[in-house]
Image 1: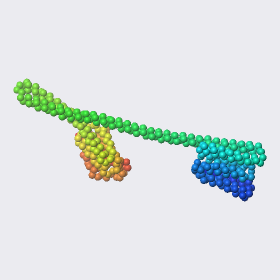
Image 2: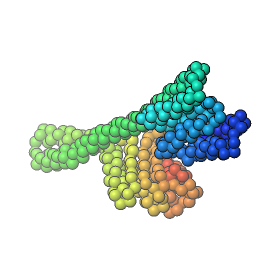
Image 3: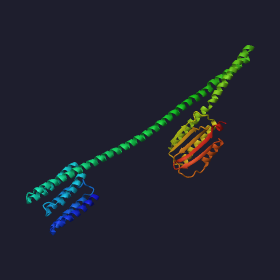
Image 4: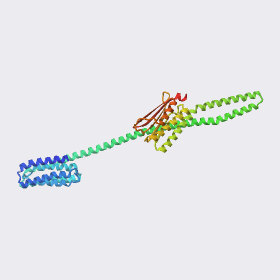
Length: 395
C-alpha cells in the first residue's frame, strides 16, 4: 500500500505542474483531473491483489493514452513517464505471459501517442525522442525483470537454505537420539550380560547346595553306618579318614555356597523389583525404568529387603500423590564404599515436602540401616535419594 500512496502523491505533483503549463479550458482541465484521479484510484482498487485484478492495468494504459490526447502539447512527457509506474506493476507482479502482453501494449500505446503527434508534420527531432523514450521504457522493463528474477532466485535459495537448515537440525536431533539409543542399548546389553552371569552363578550355587551337598551328606551317613558295623581296626580307621575327607569337601562346598549367597540376593532383588515395576506400569500407566548397577557389589538379605520396601513405598506415593507419567529407579555403588538409591518421578508440583506416613516409613527404615535420605520436590518432579554404607550394611 505504501507503493500506492507514493504513486498517488507523485501523480498529484506531476499533474499540478502539467496543468500550470497547460492553461487548459475548464472542460479539458476537469477531463484531465478525472483521468489522473482514475489513474490513482485504479492502484488502490488493485491493492495487494495485483494478479487478481491485473486487467485493471489495461485501464491504466488507456488512461495514460487519453491524457496524452487531451494535452495541448504534441507529446506530454510527464504523462509518458507515468508508463514507468505501469511497467513497475506489470513486471514485478504479473506472470510471464501477462507480462509480455502488457509490456507490449504499454509500448504500443506510447508509440501511438508519438505517431499522433506526427500528424501535425514530420519532425525528425520528435522521431528521435520517440525512439529514445521507447528505448528507455524497454530498458526499464528489462532492468525490473532482472531485479525480479534476482529476487525470485534469492527467495528460492533462501528457502532451500532454510529447508537445508531444518533438515540438518532434524538429522542432528535424529543423530543425538540414535546416540542415546545406542548408549541405552549398550547399557541394556551390559545389564543383560551381567544378569545372565548372575543367574548362571546363582543357579550353580543352588545346584551345588541341593545336589552335591545332599549326596555328600548321604555319603557321610553311609560311611558312618559302615564304620559302626566294621570290626577290623584298620578298616575302621580307613572309613574314618573317608568320613573326614567327605566332611571337609562338604564344608568347602558350603563355604562356596555362602560366598555366592550375595549373588542370589542380587538376583532376587533385581527380579522382584523388575516384576513389581512392570506390574506397577500395567496398573497405573506410569512408565518405569530400572537401572541396577550392584551386580558386582556385596549385598545381604537385610539391605535387599529394605531397599525393595523403600522402592515399593515410593511407587505407592507416586501413584497416590503425583501426576507423574514416568518413574526412574537407579541403584549405584560409590567409590567411598556406599550404595546410592535414586527414585525420581516427573509429577512434582514444586510445593514444600511434607513428611507423610510413607516418607516417614522410608526415613525410619534408612535410619536403621545407618544411612541418610533426602526428599526434593520442584516443577521437574519428586526425588528420593538414599545413601547407605556397605560396611554397616554388611556389619
